[in-house]
Image (tube, rainbow, N blue to C red; front, top):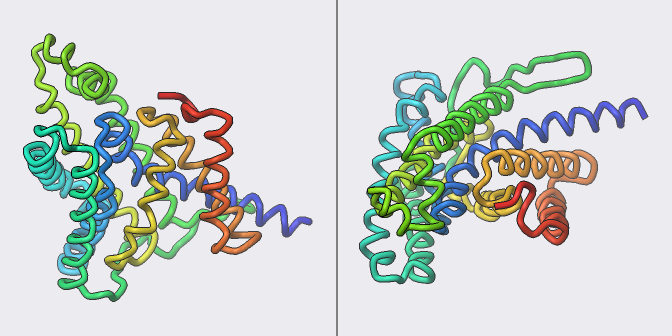
Length: 291
């Protein structure tokens, strides 16, 4: 019983840490899908670009991966703005953002994957840092630093984004743009411009999320597919537009997956996690904290 209790406690702790990472990879979808109604299913591709950017700079210059992710934020922001411009003129401007726009992001996802395979092959890539490997031992708690460090920086990133959205004019405009574009125009703000900024921010988060991913585990070009369903599920479970709800949802999914993998095997973890999602939405369709 003592062994089982130790396993359970450490599974819960590992799930919470994993949930922090899930929150980091989902925050961009909460902005693009929840706030802008843009189903950017290519988000995992941008996350992988962040992982490979960290790998290239870390292997050539030896810089800390998280520092690389922070430095690359402006690059990914500009990339996101450029992708939204292409999406806007090709689909949204003509009112074809539903099916054709979804196909655009599907294509972007697979083109990115093929490009990464052509450049890097299918071998797993990893980064080196002092905190990859060691663990922090606190009594019965075992905290791997490769999970703890991304967890801390994930919460910092989400907290800063929440402050920006809540206390700046552009942030409040982002929250309002999908609800009433006409009212936003009356406030002398261009909905298209606001959406472009918001989409740029959503892609910029992939710089750090990708760094966290390659810190936690080695990556290869097709690994992004594993996160498509998970990040949309967490976004919906959290209430679409709520950062606090998204964080809670991510940690719940992380804990459910961790406990399931510990006691029943990793192959059951996704099925149980999505079953938990369906049961929760059946009870509370608006998500944990509502939209």
